[in-house]
Length: 195
Image (tube, rainbow, N blue to C red; front, top):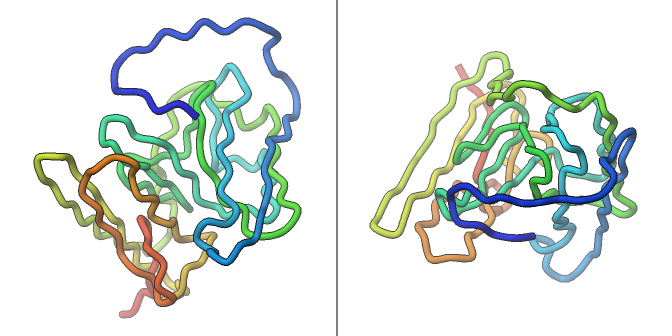
């Protein structure tokens, strides 16, 4: 994975264009530190943007959250279940790398051409009866954000289909996260909606 500064970068790529179904290389290694287990850096194999929310994905033992480096913010953006944090979206551009977290043995992450998109995919906020609170922090070094989502049936604990973990930036910028009931730092935290 390459971290790049914001701006235009010209990359000249040679070779055959990937077509058809693609299986992305993911693994799961269990250690004493569960927060470090299962992280995989993969890339969009197509010469087209793809949609993480598409039903053309096969995700087995893979958390539903998508993480991408946001060079403008110096932070990782995240996206899960229709909600983005730090400009996170379901769109993965051609050749763009992204992080996913395997959550069990023998993970599978594969995709078919049906996930390709022609126009920009926006954050959908597709969740019915949802309230969203975005908290932001700024200083001279940058900014950070955490997103709290209230929805019916959500859990206080980290749930990998509706929450996104917070990945600490490799550079010195502000850090802001909410904390799940089981102590995980979250960039997107879904909480039970009460009336």
